[in-house]
Structure formats: structure tokens, C-alpha cells
Image 1: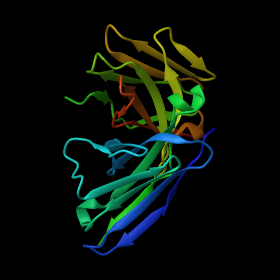
Image 2: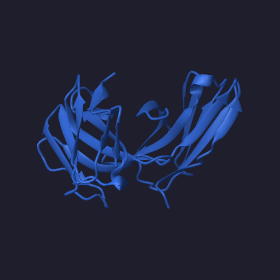
Image 3: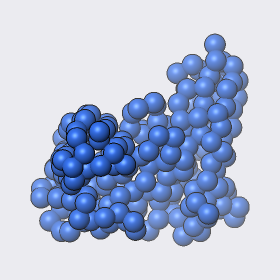
Image 4: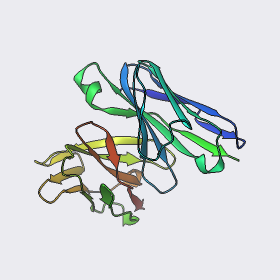
Length: 119
Length: 109
């Protein structure tokens, strides 16, 4: 199946710093990438939908100036948590959906996630 | 009300048992449904899609009832490796996924 990678897999940072998370589709071109956040014992919550070459669409309640998303190429999207605070500590997961063959096009493939801990 | 609701469990069952999970959804415009499996501290992985006609994949059977807006997953002859959180997921016209909060399953030896 299609592979999506995320980097870093975990990060610990001080409050006030910015953290960038990369999401890459390794063997297909991802026209759409999604960013989710999951707090302990809760479901995945969609933060934003990112289409290559255009601005991301943010879900209600997600601050676009705090969570900067860039989808500059068909294989890479980045999420930057600006001025991170302890309440931003969470499990951030990206997924990618392709625009090629029908199988890849219809399925979202998830990255392994990034654990962020803000001290 | 959440768009996708699941019984959070936990379900603790012995090996070999049959266990069923239920899920309801509130958005009648939802078009596609899936069951995902999520292991502790890992990303979710697609287990199976859910069709109105019902579909089976080995020990797993999924069913969708659009009239009742109800989805089910049946696991037969459960294995220790089935221990995970099972996520009920809906997808609308924009093909965005809406996740339920998950049902935790522990299969005991």
C-alpha cells in the first residue's frame, strides 16, 4: 500500500518555540493532505485540509495563524505550530490522498504521527 | 451531538470470543463508512470499508444500516492481536473523514 512518512516522530520543546512537522507521501502524489490532532483517549479531530498549491482550509476553532500549513509540492506538506504552549501537546497525524489511480485516489493513507510535548 | 458515536468500552473478552461493536452517525449525507484500527500510540489503519449489503473479511464482518444510521463490526474467534481501539469513520461528499472516539478492545488469554 501507499506509504506516508512524518518527521519528527516526537518532539519536546519549550513553551514559546515553533515546531515544524513534515508529512511526505513516499510513493504517490498526494493532491490532498489532511492534518489531525488527537488528545489522549479522544478521537482524531481534523484540523485542516490542504490541497497542493492552494491555501489550507481550516476547521472551525483551529487558528490558522497558529497552525501554519504549507503544501508546496505533491509529496510534501508541513504543519508549523507557532509559539507552542503546553495545551498544544498532542499527537499530530497527517494523511494523504492521491490523485492518480483510483485505489490511491479514494483512500487516505495515514502517517505514523508526531508526538509533541511542550514544556 | 457528535457526528459519529461509539460505545467507548472497554470490551474485555477471552480469546476465541465473538465481539460486536456498534456505531451511530447523525449526518444522513455521509456517504461512505469505514472501520479503522488504532494501536496504542500509533496511527489508525484501515480495517475495512462498510457497505449496505454487508461485507466480510476473514473473521471480520461489517454492516451498514442507512435507515437506522447504524454501523456494526463483528469479530469472530478473537485473537490476542485483535486488542486495539476500533474507530468508526464516516466520509461525506467532500471525502473528509469524521472519526468516532473509538471502542477499546482487549482480548484476554
